[in-house]
Length: 344
Image 1 (spheres, helix red, strand yellow):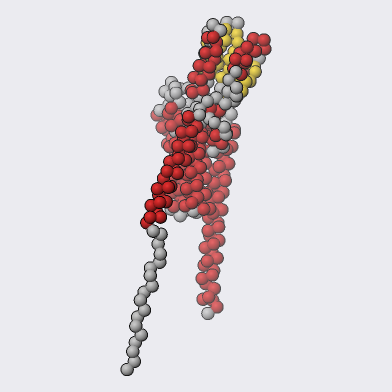
Image 2: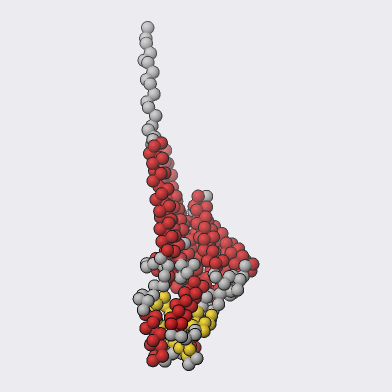
């Protein structure tokens, strides 16, 4: 009589990370993220001050010398540009070469500002120049050469458009990646979604709220290019790195690009090198381009437009490259699966 071997007990289940380790990761990760967010958003705001802020001085050299001396007492605050007369200073303000100018005339000093470039900077210049002139008993006349629209005198509504466009770009890039769109289809989806975003944003900011002036289609184009740069960057990183790429793209654009944009003040009002970094990221370049197109007839628009274009081109190129790499890997895998069957 044969005996059957006893059944062997099943092996232990595959080990899983203990719950305590997961809880520790959450407990540590959340404060780290909060600290990063506070550093990115609160630190630049708490250190807002003029740093090499471009400011013009116009008039005869002998008359402007005392003005320049008083301005240079604030070491590192202003970058002085000298102009022969008021007309040259006005042109510089309208070309976005300087944020304002002090013109010395026979009737007394005159301050030229451009609240459309930055209401915060215009107010700062008024306080600085008026305060210095009052010490000498002179009265300063202020002329707003390029004024912000009456519907948004403080620029709050225009500045508030940065975050929604950033979120729209991140969402577009993430959705395209998570839906599994690749190659040309992914590029078409990103371009189409951001184009519609630009039209909707222009309808709200230009047609309804009237906080963005200028040519309607030009404003819509700026909104589209701003959203496209963000969406392409996120989708490109997602195509190359997967979900880790989505997180990296969202981190760079949201936690760095948004607070470093200088939208509420100006890049020269942020700590160094935050202001410069912000202008190389889509949110900062988008705000600068929007101000140039909306209020300054496109003056100084080339730099930020080129920055956004490079982000869009490189991001969409990464989308195409990521799709091609995945297709090649899938083809090799399929060929490996067919090889044994052919040999047999």
